[in-house]
Length: 318
Image (cartoon, rainbow, N blue to C red; front, side, top):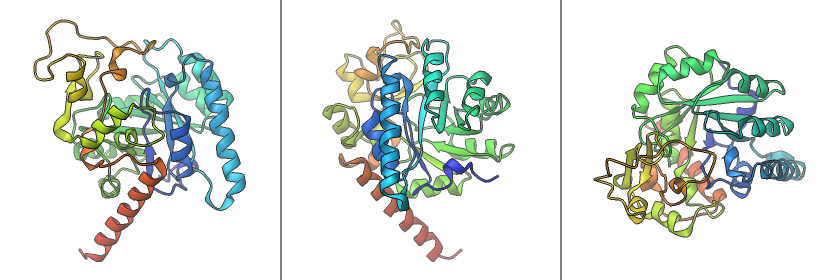
């Protein structure tokens, strides 16, 4: 099945994943101008009225860019909607996104037919993130247009399945748009995602260490200096299993190797909790992140690596 038109003319087959607290208009605009899908969680715009300000700015600046440079139009952008019952803003945020005709909606922590219908009402598409094939089937049955397979090694609320297993199980029954998430931080990894059956790669942690990202200098440096061994996977902090930087857990006063039996968190997205602000998320791909760069420079690096990987394989024979 061909990709939806909105995903067909990207510089690289990449969606920059929405980073809770970290993603902001500066980063999204830079990602889109560089030729990949930029995204942000609706909940990053606080209070709720700020969401309209962000969408007005993003659509305005990308529109001006396209008018000025018609030969290299910006990529579309996406907004992440958390449809879990703990999100009291969902319907207000959705209404605002419909008003601005957000091209791509990324839905998480549940699948809802009414959300999908609202996005489809103006021609938008919905990509739903899942950690297994069973959740993927439910999302497609409820009207999602495509899936984001969140495999082992991803940052945030990640899954545990190997990307090889997860992609194969989904492709056994689904031929629509499929995005792979999980420790992707190089151009070669983007090509590998396509080789195993995904249409696009989902990259998050590498964009934490960009100049435009709304992350502290310490957070960015922790990503740059870290490796896969610095990532821990636990449900202690938010009530949902996720990947976190061990050094940030230590700074918050916890022993990453011996978390207490009591005091486990619960998912509450109605406010900025200690989690995400002080206990920082990242995926296992951070070992490939070696410096803080402008987002455009990071995309340039990924593009160079992607083309080199393709040339190496094509020139190497079978």
